[in-house]
Length: 152
Image (cartoon, rainbow, N blue to C red; front, side, top):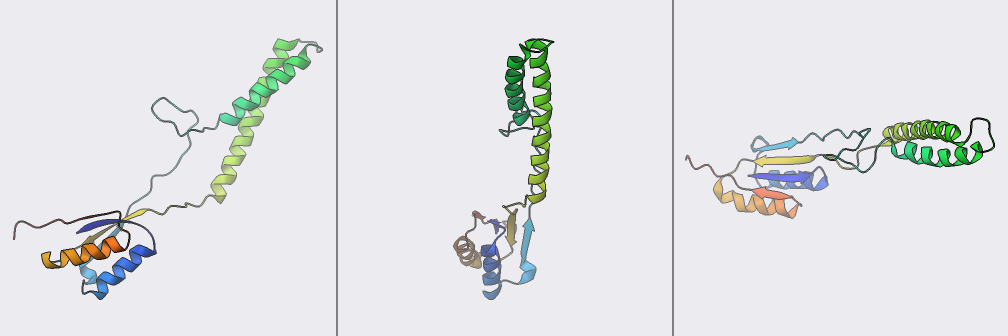
């Protein structure tokens, strides 16, 4: 029998109840799945997008700074076009630095809220399968499957 669970107290309760009902520890195998490492990409692509990237704040800051410096550039020596480009480059740089600092701070304080999923395999006789399935379902299993050995 195979079942999937969140790594939680319900899994522990299910395993304890299985042991109290006569299923030995040598007949139970609990396997945690590895979680995929979460990495943010510099650019979102058409095939993969997480909704945010390192460039979001940089682009917004570049747009705001280029408008402000272009308006001020009418009174300055090089004119509004050069000052608008300088403002865009400066705003993008400041926004990118802010985003990198925020990402670094989030990475330090980030603790994974969701633990990995667990698969529980239970070796049992066919007459115990229904009782074991009821225990697993009662303890919030995501799914339960019975694998029968047709060779015997």
